[in-house]
Image (cartoon, rainbow, N blue to C red; front, top):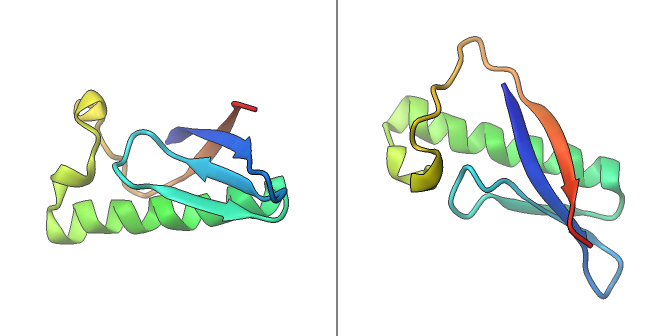
Length: 82
């Protein structure tokens, strides 16, 4: 499944990345590639919480209609904010 993530650079030069489909799904990295890999891990953890523990409340209500796929694939589409 493709996940759009928002990418911005903070005042210290780190890349901050968020996936708006999930509440509190954020990560960072010193490079864009590191931030991409780190957010994939966080998305994977969010998906585990939904699949294993049934915690659908971690989904942002705006995206609650999205159906999750098995086997799991995580493709990242970056949206650069600043």
